[in-house]
Image (cartoon, rainbow, N blue to C red; front, side, top):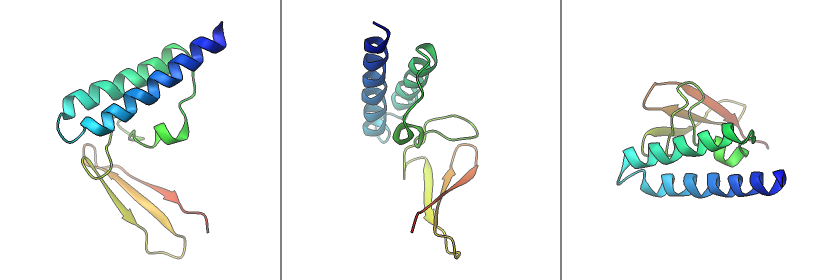
Length: 100
């Protein structure tokens, strides 16, 4: 019973995040609301959000950031190859190291 509820909740989270990414350019308020609902489902049913879904949330202000719309993505130019993601809402920059 519990596993089926968690499975349905995970599917709903994925659908909400996909719709939020699609609506980010046309309706930013709706996309923020959809992402907020996905996070709420995650906390209500005690499900760890998959890594692919966690990427679209800012680590500092916890708001939804759509790549290229309200965030800036740059490649690092150091010896360690990384991707720098900057949130345009709070200005926080964080890095993802690229495996070589």
